Amino acid sequence: MLYVLQQTLNALQLGSIYALIALGYTLVYSILRMINFAHGDIFMVGGFVCFAAATYLQLPFAVTLLLAMGCTAILGAGLERLAYRPLRDAPRVSAVITALGCGIFLEHFVLWLSPYPQHVPALLQNQTWSLGGLSVSSIQTAIVAIAVALMLVLDFIVQRTMLGLAMRGISMDMKAVALMGVPVDLVISSTFAFGAALGGAAGVLYSLAYPVVDPYMGVLMGWKAFIAAVLGGIGHIRGAVLGGFLLGAVEILVTAFLPSTYRDLTVFTLLLMLLIVRPHGILGRPTLQKV
Image (tube, rainbow, N blue to C red; front, side, top):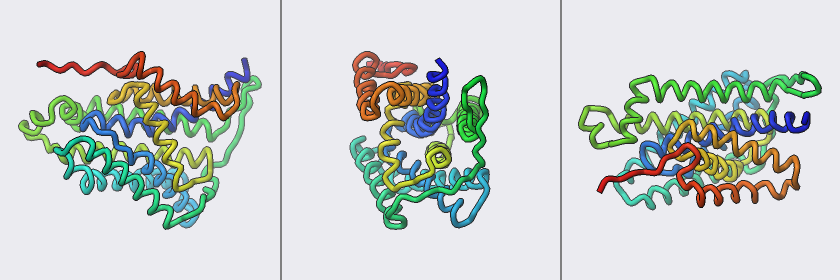
């Protein structure tokens, strides 16, 4: 039982990172019905900004986190303006191909700057406490606490602010919202910026837990976070959080009780089973269209 509780703590840590990345996918999908496949590489850029800030600038953790979120927010808004906005009325496959191309560009740009995996210096002192035989580290606590705080802030923005009201309105009917005087382009750019900032924060938290960054680390993490968003219900913010924690629990428990080679097989099998049984996700709802 104690072993299961210990693995549950590890699942909370990994699930927090997946949930933050999944929120970026679901934010963009909720307003544009588009999957931003470059989002995993934005997470990777956040990790490398963390490495640069900690190695060369020697900034404290809080400043590093804010810097990574700011850089990735600018990057996300820039990609939307330069790559996605001109294709807003184009067939969806054009936007998908462009997103994949943007991701490949980011990977190779970072690969040109830093062709080898880099070790991230310790940003926080890691202390371990024993609670009835259960080991809890300060890094685990910080990762979960920061991730949950960012999720709550995002939920407040979406549910309680005028910007969030505009986001929800655009997700329902973009043309009607534009006729009411809402600056649609600004709201969409802000949505991309928020999602990218969460991806950058996930990159910093990942570097805190697993202090090695690699130009290709966003590929698999991005796909798994996309699976988390689909599990919870793509386009549903709280569903993305649920899917992230569920995916983290599945990965950790599979690794704990089965050979680690079964981990990815189990994750993708779970996605296939869910798409068969409940294709709109756990909290998602099927789209109804009047004819």
